Image (cartoon, rainbow, N blue to C red; front, side, top):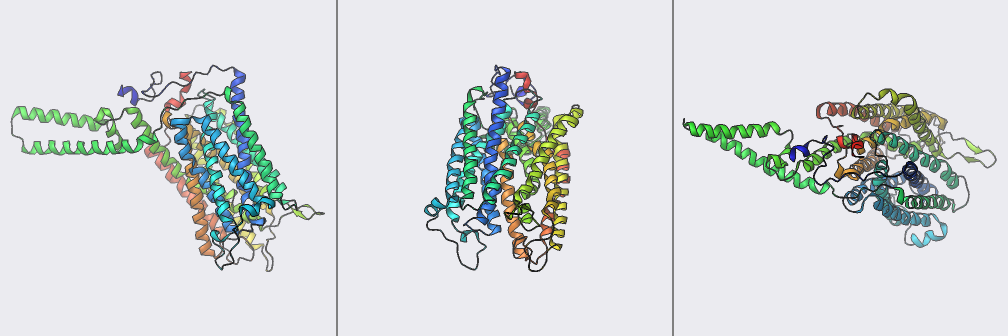
Length: 576
């Protein structure tokens, strides 16, 4: 039994505790309907998500809330970080108890409740009833987020909403990939998934800011969130209406509850193994020349040598075949999580670069030469529209790669392809940060005394947006593919949640980095009145750290094979 368990490639023999996949008896149109319903729900859900994330900084600064720019960015980081880290809890519930579809629906309802409260805070009629006892502090230390108007209800609502987001996004990507069970389909599905995400992002970037920024109505922010909230309801209804067309893989186990017991048992067995080694060495030194005793010592040594030869990792001591108490499947699953965690920790510098599109690029663009949409109304173009360059480059890049490039790489195994995508994505991310830092230096040189904005056109930001987009075509898609294809059966949603957790951790690290820059430059502000011309260093440091991480990533892959995939996921079609 243990020999079969330890060999993940023995796919025609189910491992103990692991059921076969649900047989796909759906008709072709039903499979397509299920897949595209999930993709459409994803696009609408991401529209609502980005409408909140992208426009949160604008809302907090330009509405009657009148928050400090640095604190607006902090609130955005809190929302993003919580939404990503909360995926861990719901991934465990999904894998072991609720199943993915039910967890997604619960997340949607929490999401909607939070969205309603956000909309009410943005409404001038209901704002005062929610923020009744809140007012902006007049203290000197106004830079603290705790001094901002309505900070308690806003942060509390953002955290609650983020929990609903976490429940949804921890499972949506995995659930969609499960609808396509053929071995050659998951990678293509994630390409479609990323396109759906960015279609929602484009709408959130273009339409919602137009409603919120280009109108003079005091309730313009409420109207923007109302539109995206209604589309979020549409996403939930579409997902529920397509429920009967989905394949539902029933929850049966979660490896996260086994991690600590496996480590403890491995330590106990390892300690006993060392004791046996010491006893054997002592017997050898004290033994007489008796042939019987020599024979017994030799037998004991042979057993220990054979045990050592079969041990490749400390966790192998927990195997039943090595006097531990866990079957090989559980030990293998825990060992796979170790590699997965290392990969996502190494992706943190990449996520730090990724976050700049939603935060510092916007703040930088606010203080550049922005054209008017209409010379009559004197309304300037929303700065956030520049991020469409990021989203459009992602969609075009994925389409080009699928049509002209990937078909020539079919001879490569998927692990190698994922490694290539990661490295290319990281290189492009590093180059983009150096471009952004250089543009920032030129922007500063375009500042003049008495002016808040530089003479440098905002369209010079386009290369850095396109650079991030092209980076995501490789790095972002590869992160989804790896999270799905490397996951053990008992940790499908958990592994995807670890990906989001690395994003969440990066969000909080980004906030700390901004705070450090604030200390260095007195104020983290791209205003031309800020005489500390060192914000270009902010981008250069991110680019340098990412460049260094590339070498560490390649070294870890060569030495520890951290991108090893789960053969069950790669050969899943054999179960159909």
